[in-house]
Image 1 (cartoon, one colour):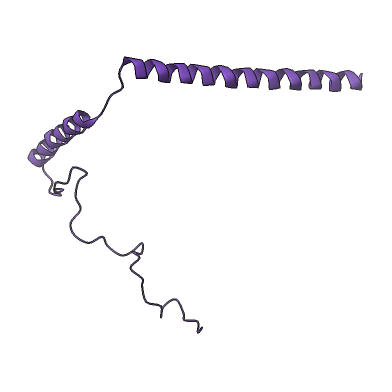
Image 2: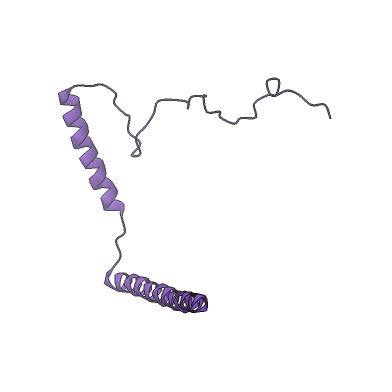
Length: 105
């Protein structure tokens, strides 16, 4: 198989860093992004952003009380397990350090 230089290779549909994305940029809500400046447009953009935030928050599925308690208990249990593990390691290394100091005396 003959080798070709990187310049002579055909692009296989991959987008390079310098290649532009096709089309106009869009916001996450799918609307067009306005690039014009000015105070009036800035205020309109702020209210538009607030509307988009409300729309996204309406889609969020917040946990109920039971799910919140379950997640809280999992976090507390994990903290206790990790804390006990670190405490045990601390005790082992403290005794080891004490024995090393006693050997030097």
